[in-house]
Length: 193
Image (cartoon, rainbow, N blue to C red; front, side):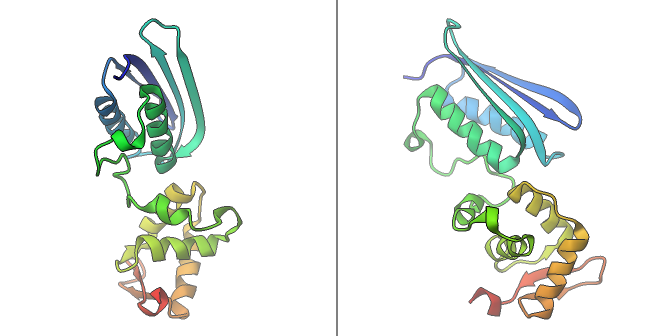
């Protein structure tokens, strides 16, 4: 049986501070509220600072966590783990198909775990992002820049990204279409082999 808990999530972003307070909800309803809140915050933000606090009904049990400059997918995973701990629920108790990761592909963390991201060059990160998130779809460089920054948690200049994409195109790794201002890229079939 799930315990009664009070959860407070505070977020600091460019616009200031905001706070979500949840009391007495079961795990699934608390998770849904957090999902709505995170989706709202990350419509305009790439990275935020987050403080989470939970108290038991009698106030004797207090658990806190803080995260600095964290991206959407990292905080989603961290908050879900926090909620599981607070509600004493394992992953097997969650309904299948339920995911907080509605922004961007839901399989990002799966493919990221196959690579040593810390020791990978920026160019290689771009290539892996293209191959894993866009294996057969077209993507604009501006959208790829935003996705890169969310997934890897680091900035990339649009000029650097455009240089990498141009080089990949020259080597036959990418196909491209559209005018310079509206250019889109797609991983070539040859590169996926």
